[in-house]
Length: 490
Image (cartoon, rainbow, N blue to C red):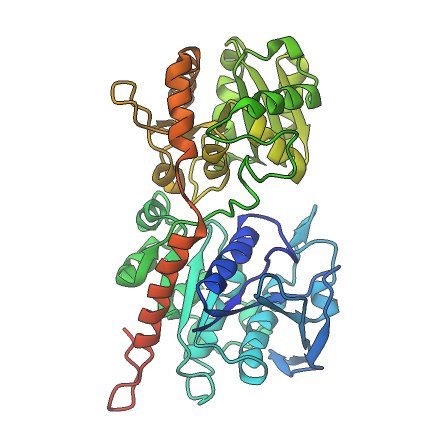
């Protein structure tokens, strides 16, 4: 099967979050299964093209015409990478915005990207299925089923859309409808209108043949008012076409046996190297080396409310009174950055924070920490808790989304379980879960059992990729024309 991924970011070329990891790992897994896979990305600053397939294509955006090129980058592990190349739109310091907020022309930028994607499949590489990701490419299924509905080159192409985080929807003023070249007929409750504004993700949810999201639990949650972000009704209406498929991880990169970024490798059969990794983290964060026997809590995250940092702030002083060391790495809302800096200054030698993101240091924390804290308000999938399991770093998480799907609560009576979960979103519940972990840490045999259980888990891409192939086949069947010549679409 020929599968085209259309995404606003993807490793090894661009990254702001977990989407980029998926666009690296899933295509590679599909390629290893024997499928032919290509990825289409915007050509951002620093991305090198090795060839140009089409020097310019005409893209109509309202009253203006734009002429991006369609280029190809260097293939990686058999996966081909292509670019939509428009320097005015994409050769910028950041992908989506800067410290002042989102770029004001994001609607136009990613409308051009989506329109160019359709030109790409007509001119360069015709797939059997298109797999789009998040609001930045959600216009692809909208365009396929509306403005290109009678285009013989693409009208039968099946299209799958994955929701990586429903909190980001691509919502713009109604005036954007004209600037991106969509007809007024699409500005209705049954299409892209959303409380008087234009919602690109909503359009994708309605027009894609199948929808996926990145864990089974999150697929259930986003059909409720609590997690649906205003789109729960739309998603429930498409419930028969919504599938939760857990993200995988690449154990060639994220495992203590193979990790080239940690000071000493180790495995479930020989854990000696983990102590060396813990010493390394203590030294990096200037925490006392004599605290090696204290449990070390690691945090790697964006410092935002979604990740539960209002709860962490709520219990900070109580947590500091526990016999723990805390190492935090992240960046996010200025209020949280300021709070955690002050928290570390108040408790030197016990709490340390580094503001920013450092991939190498993230690997070192995963390997060196004893406990990994991830108390998210909501979490579509989450990757760090999966990394933590493989590194023998016991996760403490809230039972939501992918966190609930991947972490099994430890039961001391049966010896089963891989971490500690709490249900209610409250500081008291979070603190109780942490204290359960700290208590288990004091019992070395129990702790080693939890570590062993977690390190035995397999969340590689192989199983998830097979589920996607099944979904692609279903999407292809949806697009098989009926005898009457109409499409078999709900």
